[in-house]
Image (tube, rainbow, N blue to C red):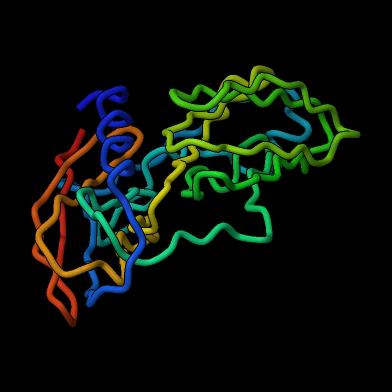
Length: 232
């Protein structure tokens, strides 16, 4: 499924979401890679080496551990029409430009959430977002502007780049319902409080693409939703 179709499907699902008190279970699982873990290559630093190359800079778009667990896979449940409330954090999450990389590289935020765009490097960065549903951002962030705040109002899949440092890439997944998770370094994840029923679970990774699976969530307890991405 391409990026545009993904966002359209997400928007259609969210339009049907309402809040109610229901009997619910959990979805747990592990996302793995269908081959030996790849060895990250070194990133070629072409600008501001005194800051950007201060520490070893390796590719981080595909992180696979020794047991083949994949980090930074975004897992979401589609077709949920009611359930628990989405919480907007009173403390803004951060997109931190640190060591000339976005940290964290991938994160899920609620629609309507304000995000702190942080420049920890003390050099010029330029935040550039590539959204589908929100207004794009293209702003210089010099060293004296430590924090800029931006709000993402609509559900979206937003790629982030830096126009000064071409290798920098990050992602914001803007969600309106709470049934999202991101896999840990081991590939494990958990989505709690899902209303009992049968749903499609969507697995998204920035380079491996998308996969889906059907699960039936029990009224109490948990259902496993393991998935293996084919090697690329």
